[in-house]
View (cartoon, rainbow, N blue to C red):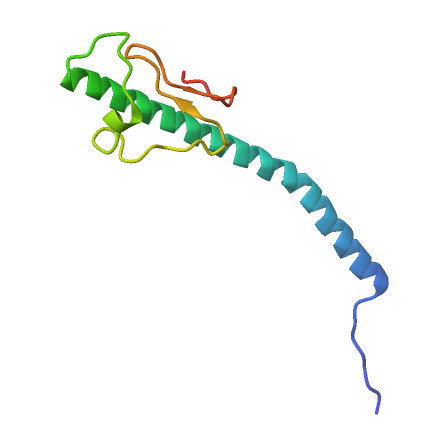
Length: 110
């Protein structure tokens, strides 16, 4: 009786490893770009939330352009919690009538 051993050859294993390596090399830059895009969008969303809360605060307290609210004025009534930039930037509320800013230069409200 003959026993048949079935196994992968070294060449077959090397080809599979080559294909996996190529797929990883293609996918990695896409993951990095997607992560940066999501962080940027989250920061812009936070800036919009701050701006909306600031405008609501100004309407409620009859503030005019140039008045600057503090974080204590906005939280928790107008902005539930003080947001943190996902890219380690710092948010500046700014005066009523101006857009809030982030120290991370790439994040600008459109």
